[in-house]
Image 1: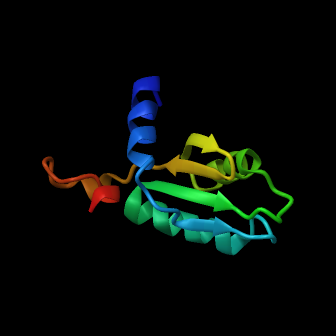
Image 2: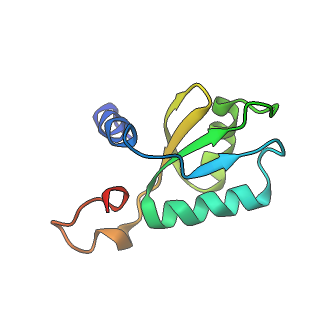
Length: 101
């Protein structure tokens, strides 16, 4: 992903609400499958790591992204954003991006 694309996605992600919370138990199979499902329908997903967990947001993002074949867009504090393009969601050329619908 190029810098300009990443910057555009960061701007879009600013307005998103957190779609996935990672709790004290860390990166369980349920978290991975939930992220995979949300990425399938939204492409751009904001995630948050629990305060009392031992896992840091950057560590979680770097561990999760390859498991769901996504790219890390940004990490800020306990929140990170990941992106995975789904060609099936872009059937209409003039349609809004899936995270805006």
